[in-house]
Image 1 (cartoon, rainbow, N blue to C red):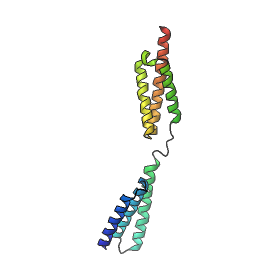
Image 2: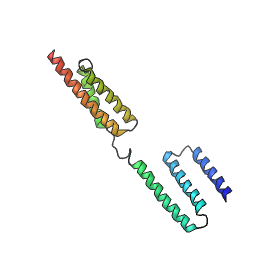
Image 3: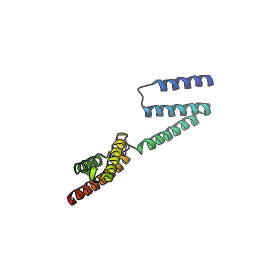
Image 4: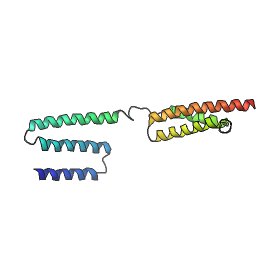
Length: 154
C-alpha cells in the first residue's frame, strides 16, 4: 500500500509541475485536493465512512481558504481610472503654468506621486494607485496655484 501510494504521489506531483496549461489557482486546488487524498489514504485506510467525511470537510475548508485569499484583493477594488485621469490633467496644467520653475518643490512632489500612481496601477495595486493619484492631484493643483500667483506678482 505504501509503495503504491508513494508512486502515486510522485506521479501526481510530477504531472502537476509539468503541466503548462494550468494557471496558479488550478495548480493550488490540485495540490490541496491531492494532499487531502493522501492524508485520507494514510489516516483513514480502513474506515471509509470517516474518510469520506474527512474529504468533504477538508474540501470545504480549502474552498473557504481559496475564496478568502482571492476574494479580498483585486476582485473587489475598482480600477482608479478617474483618479489617474484627474491627476494627469492636474499635472499637465501645472506643467503648462511653469510650476517646475516657479514652484519646484510642489511640482516634484506631484511628479513623484504621479509616477508612483502609474507604477502601482500597472502592478494592480489599485488602492495605492488611487491614494497616490489623489496626492499627485493635490500637489499639482497647489503647484499650479503658486506658480500662477508668483507669475502675476512679478
